[in-house]
Amino acid sequence: MGDLTRLTRLVLPRQPALTLYARQWLDAASAEDAVQEALTALLTQRMTPNDPIAWMFRAVRNAAIDAARSTSRRKRREQAVATDRSEWFESRPDSAIDAETAEHALRGLSAEHRQIVVLRIWGELNFTQIAEIVSLGVSTVHERYSTALKQMRIALENPCKT
Image (cartoon, rainbow, N blue to C red):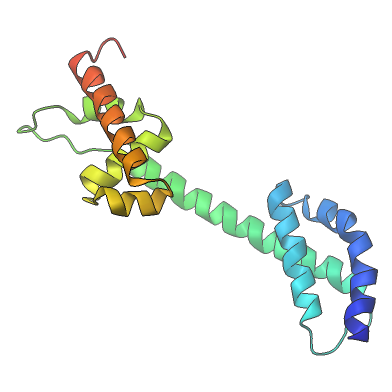
């Protein structure tokens, strides 16, 4: 217990400096996460490092670089997928509406309404399941779904006005 208290007293006052150090690679929230990850790693070491402060800065650096690389890889993958597939829907000659009009109507919804519509129509989930996913009441989900459908109907009936 003595080592834990000593480490905490050594490291906690340096948390702002450690976070600033991590900000070289990460945004503010991710930098704080890297510091917390390093602190957790320090406190779970079997043997206390000879220089815990230097160890923390090295651990924060490694965590920040790893997180930045991971974020960069994820963004590259997302960009590649977005480039390969820019449309949300595939156009089919037998469709009642064209894919571009449907995408435009869906994009016109707020993110919350769009999420509910996608879960209900394409995810084929019921309102209880959707309510659980989005952390809302079933009646609220139903109301937002109905509102979204009305907005989409208007957009589909008047594609030039939206």
